[in-house]
Image (cartoon, rainbow, N blue to C red):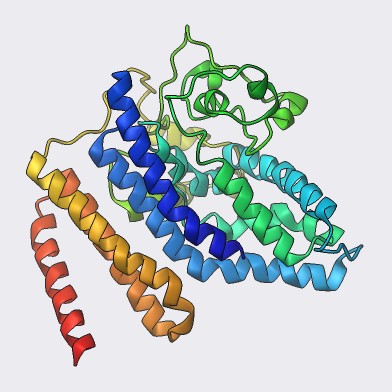
Length: 375
């Protein structure tokens, strides 16, 4: 049921993105930039592809815990179980989300969602491909209490889908609604790099958790939100976007002498580094007025990449609906082909000199695959 909900939500996402594009023109705003939006959508596709392989981990562990240690046998037929499950899921999500900003290992996964320097509905689809590796831990209280697997899976999708619409600059403050629920205003502040907003407003459905645990901040028009991260990605490569922080942590770990500092690199707050590294390899000072990453490429190339990304959605949807029926090696090869295509399209947007020959190779492989499928 959860997969069916997500499958039908995908076309709705693109319809709403189209409406937001029209609205920004009507309102005289500039919230979209083509290269940034394509990069965000690419990361959304890559996340869904990765999810085919990681869902067995998250749902499998949850099902095992429910079957082995659940304290109660809660009925999936009860509406109160579903309502309580949604509220409890959002409470667990608050702590996962908060830990994703306070623990470097978890930030390495969550950072993907914050890398965009624009804030629009495509940003909502900019999701990590590695979050499932550790995120499942935070939902085990639901399993211990006995919420059925199907309840967990569906309320997880509901909580995620709700968060789609709050990623927009075009909806103003909403009065009482902002005091109870996560809203566009509240979530804009969450995505900010400004000092006053940093690491606040973690709630997915309810903002009440933030008010209760001291992490709420109100958006202030006197301090306009600046989006992105304090260590900007400066790339449209979806694979590097997912690996960037992990790679930095691995590199810093190898250059750190004390084991205590090595552990703190991974499990301490993001941005912390031992004194020896701060001296050996100092990071540039944070500049909130920095220019957005917008490498110059021709309009024709941008249109080409956008058209090819749209074409790539066809095999991506086919993969998502058929991967479980394929042998493991075929599903893996299919996924690598999709990810490789996204990497090449991102390189074209960056104007990389090696992108054009790789794009020619990509099309040669596509043609070869199509011919092989026919015969």
